[in-house]
Image 1 (cartoon, rainbow, N blue to C red):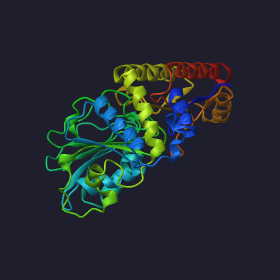
Image 2 (image 1 turned 90 degrees about the vertical axis):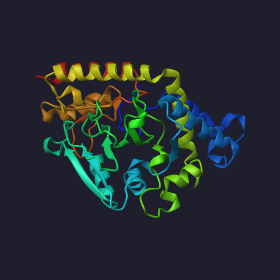
Image 3 (image 1 turned 60 degrees about the vertical axis):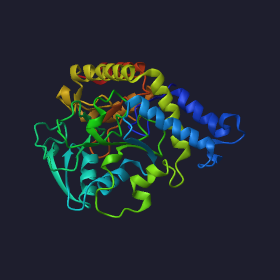
Image 4 (image 1 turned 180 degrees about the vertical axis):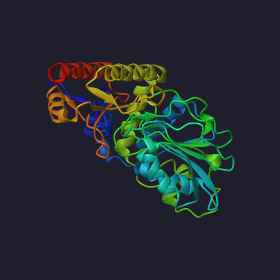
Length: 359
């Protein structure tokens, strides 16, 4: 039976990416060596990481003062490293609280400076994106979480922050659409395992002009300037994961972000239309302007039917559709590699379940 993977991460990858990774594991570019055996300081690996960095530049049209890093540690590490490298000892930054991951970022930043929580959607279980909050021009930066995988919300229109740069966690929607006015961002970070490649590396894009102004000594391993100087190989990098990102970036460039964005919008609309119009399901996010294109979250109108739904969906080949353990319910993740047909089959399953168990 065909398996259709809706896992929130690590998530589905295009077949050509997994095949390339499998081949490279056995014999990389007919070198007689596995990708897992090559030196991270060899010309072979430097060609891999430099091409990956250039593809990021090409896809996002990055100005020359922006650097591209592939680091280890995941986005959770960047919750701490961003303020460590950017926020002065006596400085302040604004943080928008839109869910679990932004809350974790706030907690980490409070160790390095003053954090102003400019707005929060905690009052309604994070089912909306706050608007009309004040931006303090004295803030070093404003931190946003672009997409909230647990609750199914997404910032679909960035706030006007004036001259205050945006630091943004794009872990779950990086390269899912075009990014306009890249100069507004002081830093973008995203762990790879949702839209960019296999787990194990984190993409960091940073305006290097913002660095070196905190007034604190930063150990080399945590210092963005040191990683920039060593071209992301200050220490042994996650070679396999970075190669996976390279293959995925080639796939993204071939598709084009315009096509990727259009397809992602179409997939999410297919699911939202069904959930909105089928009385057996309840969307977590009611406001269409705040809905995530990546993670469609919903519950059953009759929770007593959850076991039946779980078995029914799994018997039809769907996996990874359970909601995050902290909130329950269900979540269909439609990352870049998910074909439109996967969304259509999921909708057909929802209708079949309603016909058999609804009412």
